[in-house]
Structures are given as C-alpha cells and as structure tokens.
Length: 246
Image (cartoon, rainbow, N blue to C red; front, top):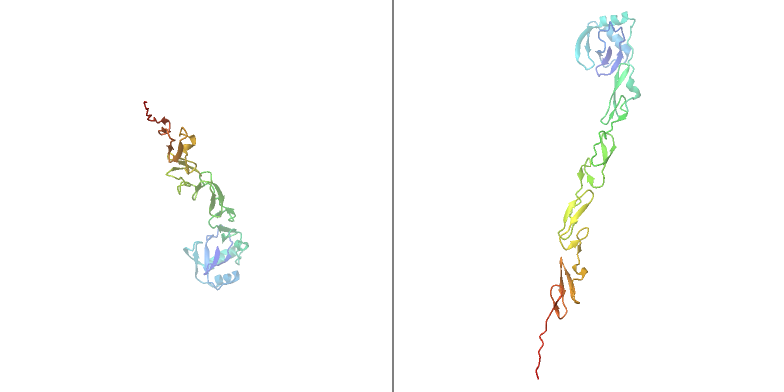
C-alpha cells in the first residue's frame, strides 16, 4: 500500500503478506507536512479512527481503521514503513519521455515520434513508404522528408510538374506536358524545340530560271526574270514580233 501526501508525492510503501494486504495497489493519503516514513508511522499511531483509502487513479474507495492497519502490518513483522525507491530518479526515459514511478518499476510516456520501454526508438515515419513516383523518403522525428524525382513535387511527390507553364512554345505552337519535359506541336511553317524557327521555304530553291525567292510564313514568293512568269518562274512569255515587208 502506498502512502501519499496531499500534494500527490509518494512518501512510502507498506510491504505485507499478499494474502492479508487487502489494500494492495491502493494508497493512504496523509498530510503534506509529513516529510519521512517515520513521520507517517507516527501519524498512523496517532490516529484513533479512520483514514481515507484511494486507488492509484485517485478514486476514493472508502476508509479503514488505522489501528487495524498498523496491527496487520505489525503482525507480519513490519512495524515501520519502507521508503519507496524512485526508479525515475535515474532518468530512464529517453528523448524527452516522461517517467512515472511505480512499485519496483517505472513507466515511460513517450513524446510523438518515439516508442519503446525507454522511448529509445524513433518511429520510422517512412513505413509504409509515403512517397510516390519513385521519390525517396528520409525519416525524421515524428515527420519525414521527401526527395522527389525530377518532374514531380508535392507532399508525397504525387504531382507531375506542368512543364508547359508558362507555355514555352512560340508562334502559336501547342504544348504537351511530359515527365520533366514537354513537347511542342508547331503550326505549319515553324519548327524547332519551341517552334522558334520559321521554316525557310526558299531553301529548296523553288524559283526557276534565275528567279529570286522571298521566304514567307509557310510560303514563298518568286520574282521572275524577264521572259518568265508563274509561281516558280517556269512559264515563258511570248514576244510580239513585227515583220516588215519591203
């Protein structure tokens, strides 16, 4: 049976026969000004009536006759109280865990991110792996950090980055988003990665008979030499010939 002061400080323990200690695991509350087990013994001897008995969760169970309690302990050869050893004094709980002293034992309450008897285990927040699209996960304390493959972002690398924003395709080209890339579909007359090049329709020299080619957008224009006409200067002109008769 625990002896607990009004400020909830455990002062001492009764260790009696388990068969006769009907209050095993419970506690007797004594005034806060008692500072030693011996003072608690004197307090028991001084009481003529009853003391409150509470559970470890501070729920009042009833009262007991203090003389009977002391006589029960004395019958087992225990005429004094034995101090409870504070197993929390050596700070067994790691990583800012909180220690609760028990009888010949202790209990650790771990902060978020740790578990184990002494809160020594950092919980692996990467299990199961939260990262998508081949991202890699680095475990932290009650958290994790993601390292996304190129082309992805988001808390779990779930987003394919839109490489078409802003639109890289020039001259009214249409952009198609890929993974860490894009593709431009150019309108007629343009080419290049970003449709930045105006195709030179004069490169194939469409103008014949020494005609001059002017490149346009998706077109060209031929300026023909004298004697020729047509789109590509391929048509000859007929000249009017005047004959004189003598």
